[in-house]
Length: 569
Image 1 (spheres, rainbow, N blue to C red):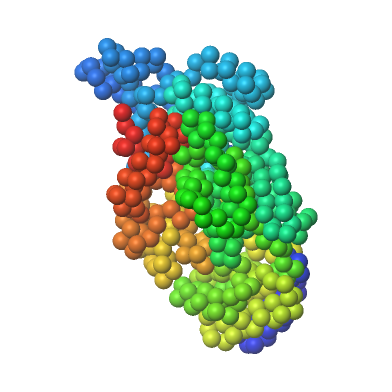
Image 2 (spheres, rainbow, N blue to C red; image 1 turned 30 degrees about the horizontal axis):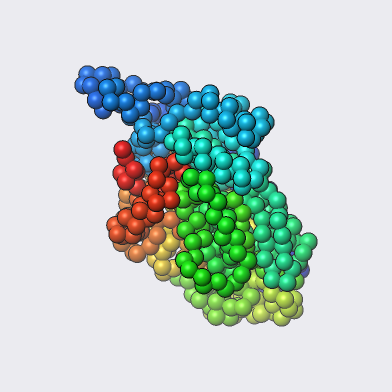
């Protein structure tokens, strides 16, 4: 047999998995090829309205958002103003008003950008803009008429200085793999895509510190480091598309956080450009530096709302020679919890991933992805992936095998397999990383990214299933080792009745159990108004003060992260 199994009978066969540090599949689950599903069409049916807030008796027009009307009289004293609204598949994001203090794009603006960037780096082509305006899920779509492609920090600075002076709103964009509408325009914001800023600037083979530009694709950085004998401290399903600048701006978590910690720890420095074009050089490469406020942390996880990250200095890790991967079946969630506790205790120094998925997630993957099969012989309620990474091949393998045998004897595990080669390891990861793609193919999907105490994580899945009573398929999976649940509700199509049962229930439940409504995806436009479920009013007020200090006109990624009410004119 290619995959060796162990069973309750004690028929336990050792199996090895050599040098699997690069085994995760090249074709990631967030590639553009999986997003051609027309979800936006269902959203369009909800409509975008333009309403007059002055002059009674004027008609409210319902307009398709492909044809936004710009009014040169915005803010004029004697002219009635139009409020532009937009709706999304989130109850709070369903009515966002375009800030009338923002200017609309004019021909003179386009001419200026062509002057500083060159013609080919100023994109007005409708087809390219269609892609840039739409998130990869086809759930959020803006109507920007312009995308700029700066080649360096100086050009980003010139762009922002000009946009700030003209009150032109902008949206920073990288690989556009986000899940909360944070990387696409809401209305007609100018898109600043940093994809051309993709150079590795330096790598120190003694300290492992990598310095690179923000547009470097995560998988390309991993391939570069592989040649040097190092690995990136983060790994995501979207690695083939996402940019390191976007990873830092959203404080992306992913599959290795249990081992290497968050980007707040591994990012040593960065360079960012603020709204007025000022370049902040915080590109330190030191592990220790206690000179004043550590301002880089303001830009890690603030989703491009305080500045555009242009360069990153990150601590990478030596590549280990021994990587093992086990795929395990558990009968109940309590067993998953106990297995996690035991794994941390018994595999501590080599444990590098602890992922879980429920049976609903497994069934979805098996039904919608080609060539995927369940590695274990029988269907079970829960599945766990345990990865170990270390330097002692024989020691690590024996340690994992002993741990799994002990878990089997204790009844924590009902079945399991250890990958024997790179292909098997890839097929295991394909199941876990393919859930997002399978959800896309299944139809409409409401996604929630929650942090909760581990013992509470699956209770919300069960509670929501009871609440929806068969109206939709509720599933839970995620980074159990980090207390991070990806709660997904899959349905034939989006509808208000279903959304009304899900929100705000999910947020209230999470808040009641002292969790976070965004573990790693960010708030974006989807959850900007929901921040109070996780943060106190005083904390949010300070965030707003920081936003207004660094971006007085609010041009950087507007309508995202912070409640819209704070920025209404």
